[in-house]
Image (cartoon, rainbow over all chains, first blue to last red):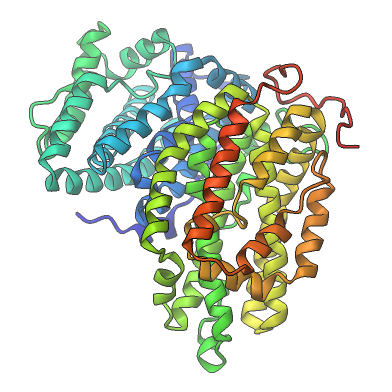
Length: 264
Length: 322
């Protein structure tokens, strides 16, 4: 299915939550484990600008459709951060810009060298590298959709579930963009397929694993992707990825769960 | 319902630009306000359409700008990146509004004209674009957070140039639809300036090193931002029509009002360069000159004592520019 970038930009909007009564969280606060997962998701959404940076250093920054998408995507994700921060604020968990800055500062040299690495790879490998970024983005967005829907199902809180479904709906549009781009670019180039397969197999990690601590990653993976139902969701994401040209047989999400000892 | 207020109320100092409020009230598409049919009855001057096609590319160059800025410590500052996220969104829609007007005049081909570069320059640009994030990343990461002042100062100068240019454009071709759009665009951009001007002043005033970096860094930029990857003929046309000597001096006067930048004449220099006849050779020489300046800068030892990492506390201005 083709992705209509004009339609996407015209209808891109910040996620709405003003009509939802968040004061219910004051009377009935969410459990600790859920707040911990929400905090993780909130941070990741705010840090989207760091992923944007990694994408932009590749030759993709000159493609009009890609830059249009990235402008809107970056803003929508920022607003997911704001929405989740508003839920957390009702639980007296305050996420402010200074604290986010502190998290980014802690990343140190790895973070400083990432764009260099990305840029060098992008330049050496050329346009095939855009395909890697697109399939990587698709894997991340599929994970996000699954994570939000799963948390909505687990928590069964009418207000939280509604907000999470709204966010997941926007994430699904991001999936459509990345998956369409990835499918086209992989379909055109055997080299891109080999590269994407190698990169995903060896370097992919759950969304946020480069930014958040291992403890937090394990908590969120266990919370949302653990147990038979969670594993089913993980398998679905893997199935989506495996349908991409040249990526059959990949099970990166389930492998990531196994590597972290998340119970099936 | 009170959720947004709860988060917005956190940590915004009185009088400080509220980035969350800015993000919340971002201005999107202008399409519904533009009466395109009015152009069928009374079209814009062809020069205006050509300038709008150029301005469209300037407004749309945010991702290229972010590309070079985000590889530096600027991306760590969540308040700045939150601003840039909404700034890019609003500029996207300003670019879109110019594009629909250009298209309404049947001048779609102007986009190619604006972006068309001679082969040698295209090659040079391609190489420079590939190298820039790497060079910037190494250079700026060794400098630290003082580089944020340069990045915000560059947006400040650019906003001042573009604001003056659009004002002039409305005077030259006072078509009611264009004037109304440019007035609206001016209000959108006024908020961008509120943030960048205040933050630039604060950061420059607080650090001698930031002032020194900004002085050198701003000189290396081809103004307006985005011009370096657009056809030289169109940049020349932009200066010829929209920024006469007096207006350039006026904008430079504002730049010189920033701490530590009293000696700069960025716009007058950019204007002179754009209006000076010179083939690709002359421009290549200028580019090599700029690159050489950047290498010389990298080799220079750090100026003054190292600044702490924090960028949130305003420091006493030590008046090195007095």
